[in-house]
Image (cartoon, rainbow, N blue to C red; front, side):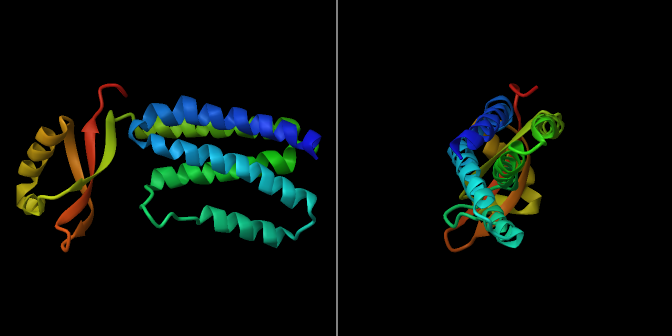
Length: 192
């Protein structure tokens, strides 16, 4: 089993390292703490999919397990959609590599890994072509959240963060704690 699993582990490691180090880190500077999750999910999924392949379980059980992992949500923090998409990628790639690499589809699996890397790269380049980066922040001056005070809000955020903020989206407002979770869009000179 180890001899059959080794090529899948190597291909998976190369693909994941390429996505994380060459693409994710470049375009997601403020989200570095997800990297541990990406690597861990990827390695664990190789082993789980290898077990599913070697233990003759029904396809329904495999898809059920895949669905559980793909719908996984951490209760302590709201994970942004982009990071959830990356988690889904790092769950899918190991399944693809482990289930098909040992069969006659070796070249196809390698090509699919390259296409995934290229697809993610193109998606990141396209998404970041406007030169904006985003951050989620916790903000405590609710009086500036009124629509007529949007210019004051941006000026206050610019002053407090030192960023060139262009737009603000309201994610969540907590009236009990007098806080709001905002997504700020700012010009990032490094991405340009």
